[in-house]
Image (cartoon, rainbow, N blue to C red; front, side, top):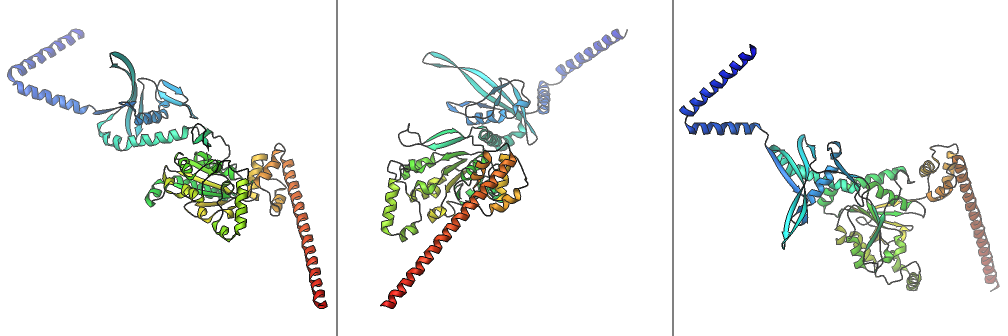
Length: 486
């Protein structure tokens, strides 16, 4: 019975609909009907979300689309959590694995609370050339979002993608150690190997306050791009590391490069033939790099010009002859001058590129010309001296894996009397890394031995001084006798 009632009700409904349809068709003008159709069409369209779609193809005509590469890099860091099918690869010169979306996969991104939908597609395109038909793959990303996000996507989202992609690419790249070649080696200015030096600020043995000062200075440097532009200075900074051999200058350079994740260009000045080649080497370096010249006082004659003026001309000539005959210098005639080095550090060409550190090292700071040492060239001078108790504790922690020891107080007292470099202490620890007690005893014995040698040297010097005084007194007595005799 209920079933029949339902059918009767439905029949009545259909009859009513047909009745009203007849009235509308026969009594309402066609123009009014069309207007009502348009109204309801607009109304329902308005209720639906208005979407915008942007296609980002791999190639722009025949050129690579940089935005496509940026989007691919950006999504590779995000799509793992959402996409169902992913491709995994390890690009050349990259230290990390890379995920990419497979064809027709989708991914939802969120930016400033806005939802944006990405998808990846490959379409086969056929082209004809001289009667031949070729098939090429057209790869593209599709971005879909609500129309109200149009301005945000254009002004904020795409710049954000390109900036993030640049950071990801920088973090993922395999860092390099470059060295300059002599002329005639395939015409290349720089050759490279992977940079894998393990030194960090945690392992380098130096005063903790100086270490933190350097780290703060480095972070301030890399974060002040707009500041350097505003004040009209090239985005670079110069460090001079000086001190006795074995005090950790090379280790500090490696620590700085690892801290900033920069490449290193190890510049050998003796392999540079002229100032113009030096300039070519500079402009072929990349941003986010450390340019290093070790033992700069041994590479070229960059000594103090004022001291040269005070020297005897014969002494200057002898110095130049010795320099020419020195087998450690290059066999070809180099015309690199102090002026060329100064322009390399602070000339017009030094502004090509950006975010670069220039680090010089020397064992004898006093030998370098003052023009090279001034601010704007060598902005920060870092003195790496003999081992103190703080750097000794770092070495003990690194090599012996101890923080404190019962004879640490004795070590502290002896470090104030004897000069040992971090390299000297490390060499003692290397021979007994599995026995901390033996390592500490050996280093104390080495200090005592050096202290004894220093005492013997002082006694020997004192003896020579006394002998010289006796000779001088005897000479004066003889002179007095001669004066009296005359």
